[in-house]
Image (cartoon, rainbow, N blue to C red; front, side):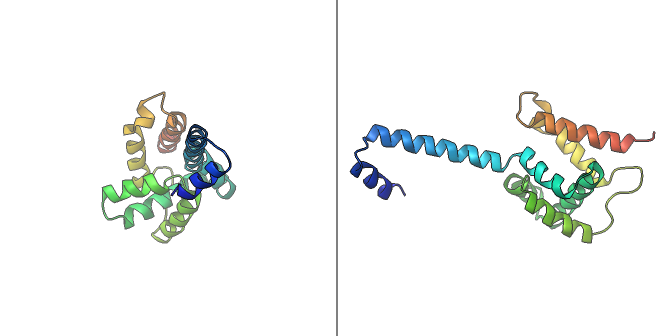
Amino acid sequence: MYAGFLKGAHSKGMTNAQVGYVVAEFAQRMQLAEQMRNSPEVGEAELRKVWQTDQQMQQGLGQSYRAAKTFSQDEGHMQRLDAKFGNDPDYIQLMARIGKELGEDSPPGGITPVESETRAQLMASPAYLDNKHPEHKATVAKVRMLYEKQHAGQ
């Protein structure tokens, strides 16, 4: 994979140490770029362009979750899909469109079984339990919002 690059770098006078440095720095930057691309904050910002209110956001996320859960082979498959696409706004919107076709989203004045299951899963996740986890604040906010939605008006 790097043979052509190494040959070219050496022909330009780069030493093995210089090439090693450049390759390591590039790999680190690519990893950071991938992490940013899969960042929940980036995904949420993109989704907020489409689902501007909290109610629209929760409805869309609920529909997305319902579709993914319905068409996943099993819990392991669902987890792999979530790990691979869970913060991708295009995937989430696609699943929401499919989920919308599966039926009405949430009953008035309460949360759907999907949202209840999501809240329980979030509360059991490392991101919720570990306040040093990079996704802790976002996860706590999601749990709080689902709790408030469930208990609104009680």
